Image (cartoon, rainbow, N blue to C red):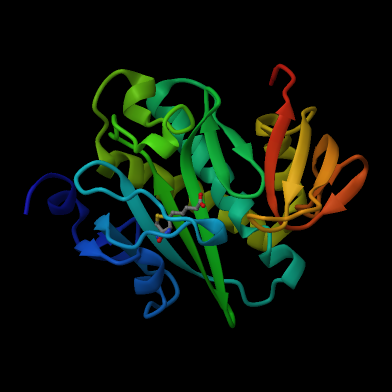
Length: 251
Ligand code: BTN
């Protein structure tokens, strides 16, 4: 065992770590987990994204991890904002490795310089939730369908990045945001997210499914204090947002 896996050890910042060289999906592995557990894999053979999309998960390059969280005591509306909490922590993490400002694209993507560098897939089971986080760390060649849309920390930084350092930074940032979320709810984090909101001010369309014949469309007013996306003054609680016309971001 070398490099990333050797450095993982059995615990990362107090979390018990379960790692596999290859797994189907760390989110599936996390279904067997207990509160606090962290599941990591070097590669995923069936990595999943939202709306049944596949998540590109080759070995040796990126970070694929799933955290088991306790969401007892939180209102269902608050629980549904977990992808944004994870997105904020992942954006803060990415910033540390390339020196830019990463943006969150509601509801679950992190973008840098307009390209996707991280995706988040959360799952709820009773009082436990899984936050699955994939970060493109050292990827330099993406499949054709992702080219021009995906990037990695390495491409942004112009140098190889230590995956262990990314995971440790992610756990630090996530822990802080998760504690804040559990004690004060989503609203304070919405204020933080508004500084990193990729969609705010853009003309967007929001699809409820891949083939939604009737997407909501209009000017995006950003992310509301309850986690909804505001489009033409109306709140949208789920879907996949696409930008039609973008405005410049200054944060
Ligand atoms: C998306 O952008 O659609 C979400 C992608 C989520 C990918 C991560 S990688 C770790 C975890 N395991 C999975 O199968 N998916 C998530």
